[in-house]
Length: 227
Length: 107
Image 1 (cartoon, each protein chain N blue to C red):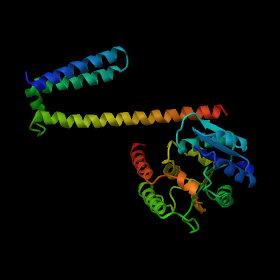
Image 2 (tube, rainbow over the protein chains, first blue to last red):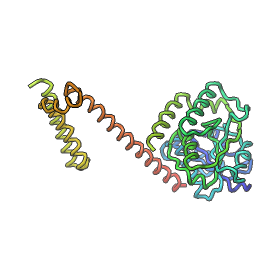
Image 3 (cartoon, one colour):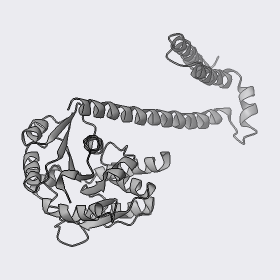
Image 4 (cartoon, each protein chain N blue to C red):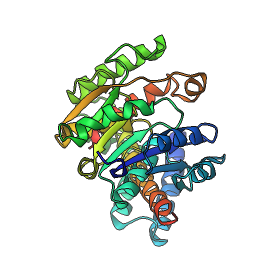
């Protein structure tokens, strides 16, 4: 696999503290194509990303993580990306998991891989988070008939062709379930890959509040019936 | 005239005037002009021609005409809110598209 065919897409909202480390980690591992969408941050996310050598885009107003990722994906496609990886800005995802995530996609065994923190037991998932994530796995199964072990993992790798097929319209956090829905609708071949999610104090503070899950569920119901 | 009829009359006159003004300023289409005039007309019928209103409500098994109005109003409100919701969603989506286009062009 040629690492220059891979584009890393990162959405950052007020992530000036971590984004530099994340970019450096990817560059050190040989992934040079990194696009960061600064989603209308009030801090210097964009400047930091640019300084560390990423392609830095900026949303003039905050549109949500789903929208920011889609902007990065569109940009990567324009730059001729063959493979696209969505990666978190807060350092939750490990660069070491990238080869395993990319392998099935590059070798043509899958159109998209999704990271799962539950396939092996190495991630130290906080209990409340575990309950919530498992609940959403059930909801995903109920809504879309897709059986996953981890429904809301932002670590994904996919081909440019799959990226063009998926119609990603969800602006905010419900984009994670929208990915699953689009995989089903476009009949993409997917595979879950065990990854380790690093729960640091920083990422926990930055992560989704449990209440937001209710909002996501509400959005999912609306989209289910309105599309 | 009952007090409620006076209130209904005031609301009706205000509603009709607002509707006509909005149409003249081209803020609503002819379709919506007709729709709103029908609504205000309905208010007038219920307030001033209760016999006519009862002719509609009784065959439906609704004893009092005013109940029919309440039921119909709730349904109508739901429908209008739903329309506004759809409109908002498409507005939001369009805003995102613009923001995305600006982000990519300015790169």
